[in-house]
Length: 261
Image (cartoon, rainbow, N blue to C red; front, side, top):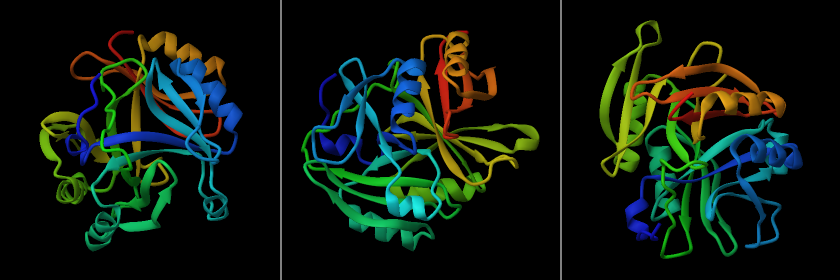
């Protein structure tokens, strides 16, 4: 895939990583379940494992930073949204009722990031890379992230926050009965994910990222044999795809999506 200009990805999720308390365990689990290949980080001296789908870099695995561990941060997946000025967007997050948990920080040879949360507490990162060109992964390709789902507060107020911040627009809204409304959102004119009120059993608001796999039943067996749990599904969703929600061996929530059982 050609490298799109940096402006074409502004407001989109462009990277994902899992903060881990067992880096070798996380490497083994996701390599088996998703089929990602692992590459050591060569950009700086931080412990970080790059996840690749073929030759496409999708995300990474890293130890939970010491300061975050002291604050009680648990293993979790986080998504990075591309912006053109991390400090300016951090100010916008605060002005809109969100929070900044880590002020803008430079990663040598990579870029600048800040750790943010929306008004309901769901975390995400603001990111601006050093490179003028940004590699954008194909959301339909196996091993890439195909869908972004917010389990948050009221979908209407949550959408308003992200829309003002990143320019996301509303797609279809689906009535899920007692579970409320599922609001699809689009980025740059393409369906990118959905927002719903978090379920009662979920301890806090969070983003859930759906990784593309070839077939869901075989993936379920890989999850179980690698020590993970399936907590929801397999379930068919509108459009004919099949999904599961799962927990990896460290308790980090993830999701898989496939075009067939």
